[in-house]
Image 1 (cartoon, rainbow, N blue to C red):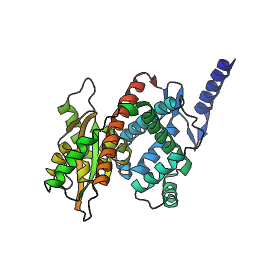
Image 2 (cartoon, helix red, strand yellow):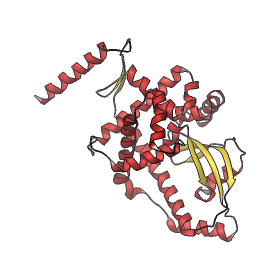
Image 3 (cartoon, one colour):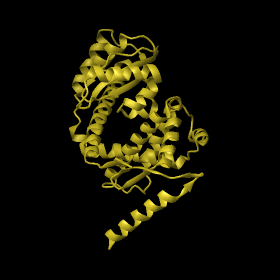
Length: 313
């Protein structure tokens, strides 16, 4: 009986979405992710959301923006299906409120009210954003709960590295403002070919838009922006590459456990402040943890995606 009701509801939804008129335009079913239907209206709304996060996306060809929006929706639906196995998504998530504050700050807004006012320009409501933030925070929580025992942080090694830098007078209060593109190779791709595609995209569309298109990092929605990061938080490999480039230049691709990383140096500065060893060590530990969690998150998502049926209409 329940199965029949479910089938009936899906049929009604399909008929409803197929015949409804929205702003004088027919709603079209563009694709399905398993049984989830995605329409042209969903894609248009996602495009407005993505442009709100990265205004430069409005400058790229419409066809390319459609692809970015569709991929963004696919990722969201796949994650949501997995989250439904572990959480009641209708409940309020307290942690998401904290994530929301970081979200506003990352976009350079002072408070929630200022951000809400900005969203009105894109016909987007706060609740729409909060649902996305809640889902992402629950996804991070799920990854932590399931894989925290796989995280391996050698705190002694990090301590020795920090001590060595300080004793050799290598430690400076230098900060770098950076952006990133983390890309992976498909089975039929080689590094040089993929790199040429990315470089061409950067040349034609800019770094931020290219990050939206090609990066698998969580920062991709923000155009790859990481922001200011302290010198001592960077690994020796990353620091070596960054030190070789000037402002607005790109590093060579850096191989990581999760793909290849291209860093753009936006700016750098010297900050005069006292060094608290334990605080700096904790920053190193947290930075390494976040890196490992992002690697695990991408691997886990790709595994789920392989078992998901995606069909174009």
